[in-house]
Amino acid sequence: MLLIAARRGDDWAWNDLYSDLIGPITGYLRSRGAVDADDVASEVFLQVARDLRRFEGDEPSFRSWVFVIAHRRLIDSRRSAQRRPALADENDRNWPGGDVEDEAMKKISQERVYQILAHLTEDQQEVLALRVVADLSLKETAQTMVKSIGAVKALQRRAVVNLKRLLEEGDVTL
Image (cartoon, rainbow, N blue to C red; front, side, top):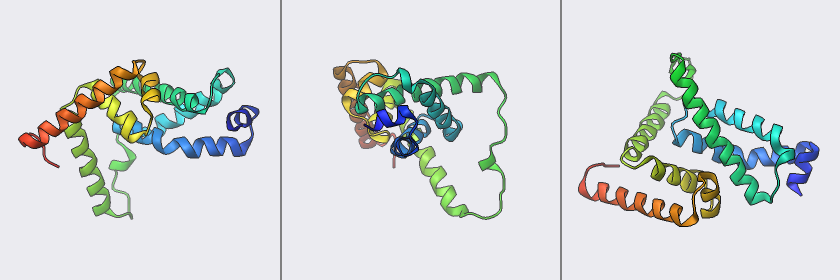
């Protein structure tokens, strides 16, 4: 019903879809190192709006479809960033106001997570981002990654085992 209303262009339906997905989409993009996760998320929702009429399936399939779009926009964003010089980020400027300590702690903890995840393979990082950050089911993760559910389970298990081993051996610390 929500998808039908969104296809009709009902504002309430779009608001519900956006509200339900913006957090997980942005979190996924940030966890995968998107330079400007908010900008990429905007591109994702523009693509969703353009292609919604062609989508066929139920709401869980819709969620997976949106994450496939997010994954593709992330790849496009990375390719684009490689072709152009880096510009100063608005967040790096010395803007007045805000809680500098809080922002510094968020940045440190986010960087620490990236450092820890860097010890995993790209596919293992992707599985953890989709399963933990985006909160996708095994089936949705498999659809997004174009892998079997068994392959996703194996990647997730190896990722967790590798993280546990790294923590036990002291190669990484929290």
